[in-house]
Structure formats: C-alpha cells, structure tokens
Image (tube, rainbow, N blue to C red; front, top):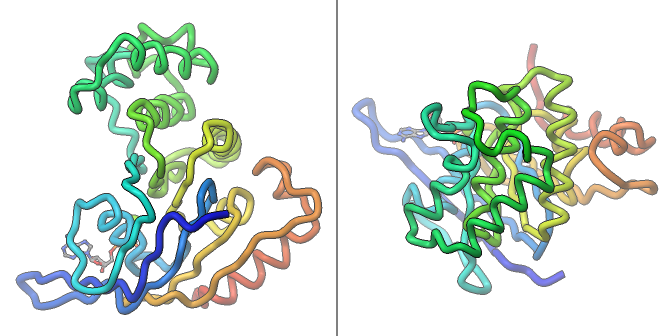
Length: 248
Ligand code: ADP
Ligand code: MG
C-alpha cells in the first residue's frame, strides 16, 4: 500500500508557567493508505499530543509531517461530546453545517450511514435516549459525515464498560474498513490495539520516542472480537506488555 503520511523526528515541548514539558522527543513512523494504526504507550507519554499536531490543533516544535496528498482529517475523542439539545441527525450534521457543506446529497449520505449502522429508529431522538455504545457510533458517524480521508481516534472507546467496548470496537472497526478509511487510534488498551490494528506503534514513556513497531499478523485475522481468540494474540500481548514496562 502507498504511504500517505510520513512523520519524521517529530518533537514537541509545551511551555508552561512551571517551565518546559518535553512531550515528544523524536517520533518517526509512517502510515499507509487504508491502514489501521494504533499508538500505545504509558499514560502521559504524548499520544494525544501526536494526534493534536496531526489535526493542526497544536503546533509541532520540530520535525517533519508529510502528507502525500491534501488529505482531510476527522477527529474523534474519548468523550463523545454530543449536544443533548440536538437530535441524533442534527448532531451528525454539525460538521457539515460548520464547514458550509450541508447539501442535500451530504445529508442523505449521513442518513444512510445512520440507517446502515443500526441507528435508523433514533435519527430524530435526542442523545439521552441512546446507550453509551450507540452514542459512540453516532459520534463516529458525525466524524464520517464530512468524508475525511484519515480518522484520528483518541481513546474513543475507553469511557465505555468492558462489554460495550468490545462490541463498539467491532462496530467501529467494521465501519472504518467498509468506508475505506485510514485510521490512527490512540489507546492505552493493548488488547484493543492488537485486536483492531494492522500495525502498532509502541511509544516510550515521556518524552516519547518510538520504542517498537509491530506488524500484526494472524493466520485467521478477521474482526476485533474474533481476533482476540487467535492463537497469536497472547504472544503479541506479552511482548507489548513487556515493552511498556509497567511497574505495579
Ligand atoms: P497521553 O495522551 O499519552 O496520555 P498527552 O499527549 O496528553 O499524553 O500529554 C503528554 C504530556 O504533555 C503530559 O505530561 C501532559 O501533561 C503534557 N501536555 C499535554 N498538553 C499540554 C498543554 N496544552 N500544555 C502543557 N502541557 C501539556
Ligand atoms: Mg491522551
């Protein structure tokens, strides 16, 4: 697959009242078209910072970020941040409204996504009627509404309980693959990363560098819930767990 993004020696320092915090020391990796990449690393190591820089919400301090084309980016956060006073459809149309792209076609595209992904009967409901998993699905569809080429997911499932997280990971994975998107997901959940990814970037503790990159190959690779049962799963888990060097 073609490379769509190359990150080289990315550095980031934050200047705070208490001095400088170096978040990223030297982060380099690439992303291929339609790939599902996960970034794992200890809490506070700089994972979200990488996504914020890619989404242009933060400036890098140094290094290179090269997109092979003019790609558009969608960003999905941990907190689904749906507006309670807007219906499901109105929430999903928000990005299109803000960017002045609310055409009849785009609206139909969103309605179709909602129908395809099991939210038809809730189109005109308010978010308070939805389960946590459904809310995340709505948040994903809102992110997809503007048809971004690359999706950034920051701990998108971590606010959910374990059972819902498994189910919604499966859903989100299938939607992303079916819609042909490239995804970069930040998570602290090793199992989630292994079950969903084509490759995993393991970061060191802060300031982050790339400690290791894993290509996730499983003989019977399929959807995330299924992948958790593959025989290769446990050895990836053990290896990445050791890389993270978690002290209890
Ligand atoms: P992670 O997502 O891996 O948990 P972050 O990327 O959020 O970590 O943060 C990395 C480090 O940078 C942390 O020490 C955090 O406190 C610091 N940091 C993040 N954003 C800011 C900011 N806007 N101002 C100052 N420090 C920040
Ligand atoms: Mg974070």
